[in-house]
Amino acid sequence: MAQPLILTLACPDRPGITARVTGFLFERNCNILDAQQFNDRAGNGGGDRFFMRVVFDPDGSTAEGLRSDFAALAGEFAMEWTMVTEDRPRRTIILVSKFDHCLVDLLYRWRTGELPIDPVAIVSNHPREAAIRVDIGDIPFHHIPVTPDTKPQAEAAFRELADETDAELIVLARYMQVFSDEQSAHFAGRCINIHHSFLPGFKGARPYHQAHERGVKIIGATAHFVTADLDEGPIIHQDVERITHADSPEDLVRKGRDIERRVLAEAVRLFAQERVLMNAGRTVVFRG
Image (cartoon, rainbow, N blue to C red; front, side, top):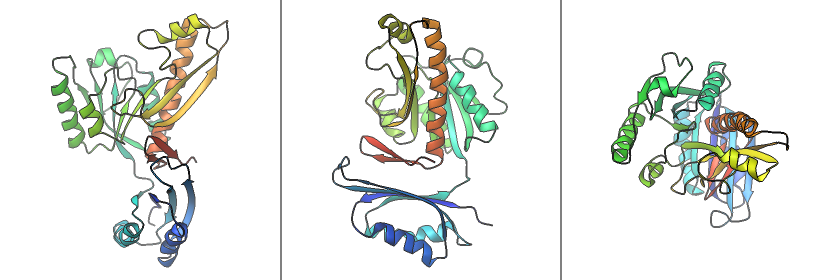
């Protein structure tokens, strides 16, 4: 039996889009299993925009044939669209420095079947013994050191690795190196980063200690796409946790790590399930 397919699309808003898309699937005897849509009347992307995600049973039709047939409809409505198999794991590279809590969580969720990813490589700017304290099995590990003088060469080596592995998703799991503008542009729309939500208030070293000194009552984390604007890319997922005066700086660090791993894992899940659509400087996220 053919696996369900996921159709995602974005286009200028106009009457009849939903009817034409669902009619297209009906005419080919495809059974819609889930459908979500959003009309952006705020004009965030420059005029009204329409977004849609449809999961459907192709009933024997091939994905290639459906894509070929849908192209004409997509052209009529000026759609940006994809049509992919639902259960296909997304080929993923995970980058890490010396904090591996996010990496450990991603690997656990992958191994238990919670995350539909296929880790094709783990990359660090530190040697393996300094970067990872968990068994990564047979996932290839690559040490790509980065210094101010060698940064262009290091980024070129990583782009080559991403091409060789056909990586669809790049995850910065507390990777403590800033991508250049060129690198950010190369991986636009498929590179996810995680950081604490104190920015821009508490920049630099020891942000949780800075927050403790100010007596903050909420800490959080933000997962977003990487862009040339440092830590300001389109947001995918965020969460917060309340703290009290009794929490020490070490408590904030501990709770911060916990929320970072949860927020990053959810952002990866949303991306891998084709639930995140770009809308200029924002995202449309179809949850489920």
